[in-house]
Length: 239
Ligand SMILES: Nc1ncnc2c1ncn2[C@@H]1O[C@H](COP(=O)(O)OP(=O)(O)OP(=O)(O)O)[C@@H](O)[C@H]1O
Image 1 (cartoon, rainbow, N blue to C red):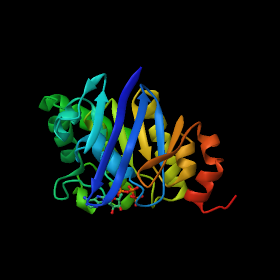
Image 2 (image 1 turned 135 degrees about the horizontal axis):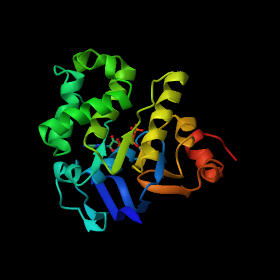
Image 3 (image 1 turned 90 degrees about the vertical axis):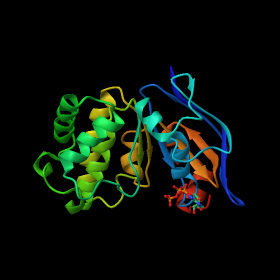
């Protein structure tokens, strides 16, 4: 079953066509990896899915429903959770309070349920020991974990992850992949933008490569990575 469908979506900033006529379907339970050079329009595509930015043209469908006109909080209530490339926690609130807030306002859970969700997500993301620390005091790894945890606390059916492995050590990236594998096993559909290719390859069922706002390649991960055009554009390898 198709969970998310983009139909010919486009977005320009002035003369810059950042998303150019992209059509895409993501199946329920699938993990789609997105790669592309800096500035290719990957985060913008997330913004169009989450509703942070409105499409200029095209249509966004989720669970068979046209959500193009919905606001970000409405899309979140519908089950679309996202992390941001630059972590965006409430820095003066504790880690636990950040998660309760995400569960209450993003996940529309009553307060007692939100407390339970926050507790569960702390365990799931390895943040239990940091529950009472101000979010602003966390290390990079833990800020990335919190970014994932905040999205999870909304209980998403579609999880959008924007470069959550960048800057992590090998060991930390492996831990993150293990966490994501557990989330995937629970049936959560994921779209993951990531430059740490080996982490992405450990999880993705399919890869999409974007260049200048357009699809450059799409398909089975290893076939996509071996595509000469992808190697030339993304890895700077001339065929
Ligand atoms: N609000 C905005 N106003 C003007 N230009 C923007 C805006 N948001 C993004 N852009 C431009 O759109 C292009 C694509 O940006 P986007 O963040 O989507 O790329 P990206 O593929 O996610 O890049 P990166 O890998 O560096 O995160 C860039 O040239 C960026 O400067």
